[in-house]
Amino acid sequence: MRRNLLLLLLLTCLMATAQQLPDRRETLKAMTAVNAYFMKKWPDAGMPTFVRNKMRPSSLWTRAVYYEGLMALYSVYPKQQYYQYMYEWGEAHKWTPRNGTTTRDADDYCCSQVYIDMYRITHDWRMIQNAKVNADMIVNAPQDGDWWWIDAIQMGMPVLAKLGKETGDRRYFDKMWDMYSHTRNVEGGNGMYNPKDCLWWRDRDFDPPYKEPNGEDCYWSRGNGWVYAALVRVLEEIPADEAHRQDYINDFLAMSKAIKKCQRKDGYWNVSLHDESNFGGKEVSGTSLFVYGMAWGVRNGLLDRNEYLPVLLKAWNAMVKEAVHPDNGCLGYVQGTGKEPKDGQPVGYNNLPDFEDYGIGCFLLAGSEVYKLR
Image (cartoon, rainbow, N blue to C red; front, side, top):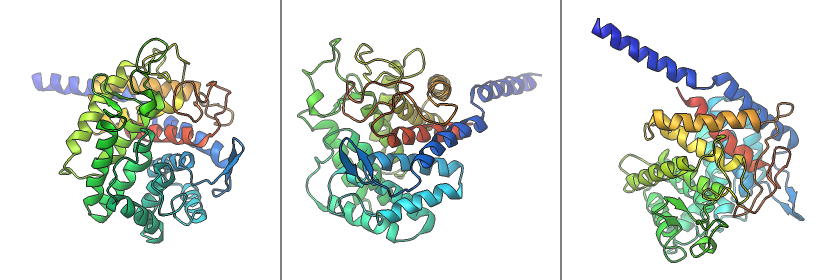
């Protein structure tokens, strides 16, 4: 009798959890609709973008983040059209970082993340060759301060993690830690990470004494989202015995708690995490990155399911219901490019950001992890 009761309780808990999760078909429907909107708008994967009076190649960071998301979608829904679109993009740029193999700018070599993932599918060395030449230059140089703004952690750090895994050369992991540690603990004097709040200042311009209008420190949502996503993407790659794996996990767990505390009642996060009065409101790019990280953490057993699943699902469901345009898949409430809450405004359902690609990429990253939840 007692055994039957325990089994009944276990089944009840499992059913309750399953009922909490969105229908996977609906999750995939939202992702494919948003992605179809972008692919229809940009049928030529190599076409440059003219934004703010300047022509920009499609290998820039905004587009690379989109392809990170598309690769995530492809991992759960391997449609040939998606592979072809990624292949044509890589071919258009000769599988080379923006501005060549000598660039040290993480925004330039963010695209290498996708090149490496494509190599893993095809084993075509061309796809990885120039990414490796560029990364080797960075690894063999003495300086560690290239990632002076926290966005760069997501743009650059996973490249080194992926190459370390792919080649078995732990020098990539060592350099990755040196550069991450510099940004975290040294950059700007005392580092960009505030251990008191477990959140990150975007760059030295926002270190104290800089304050938000309400007197709080300035913690930009998407900037913290970049770091949070980078930790996920690194932990996916590095082995269990990597020297600093636990350090990354510790930061991920601390950030998770801090981010959870900042969630709005409607499920989103404000662009200013500690000041809702400074351009407060729904915002999708930062929210998507937080959902991505939390869903991955729950799925991999690092975050307590009962504590974090309601948080991430509230955010995901809100975005699917309120941000995705039902008629064409356009994604609303995405803050435009910048470095702080006031940039890229106004944010609204019908306000398109200057670049639409990275917001879609963030949304696809989030959706792919929600889709994998059981």
